[in-house]
Amino acid sequence: MYHTFIFGPFNETINQIIGETKTKVNIPLASVIHGDLTNAGEKKAVAKAKARIQNIYKERKRNCQSILLEVRKNQHKYVIGPRGQTIQEILQETGVSVEIPLLDV
Image (cartoon, one colour):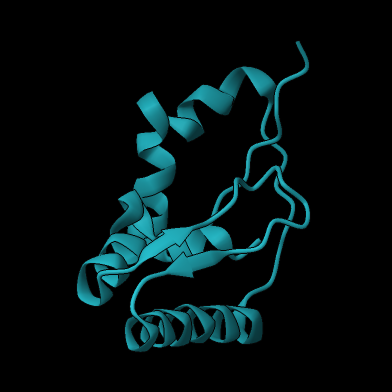
C-alpha cells in the first residue's frame, strides 16, 4: 500500500533518495504480497536511505486512509492515462495513490 509513496510521482522520491545516498534500492512490485524492500551500498548511506524510507512509511501509515470508488471498467483507461501518466499526475498534484484492479482477461 505504501510503496507508491516511497516511489513518489514519476519515481521522483526514490530517485532522489538513490541519488543523495548513492545506494541501490529494490522495491518489489505491488503484486508481491510479502516482498521486502532492500537497499545496498555503504553502511552510512544505507542507514540514511533506510531512515528516509521509514519516515515516509511512518508518516503515510499515520495519515492515510483508503476509500473505495467504483469506476466502470471501460473508463479505467481515462483514470490511468497513457503509460500511467494520469495516475502519476494525480499522485503529484494531490498526494493520493490510485489503485486500479487488474482487468479480467
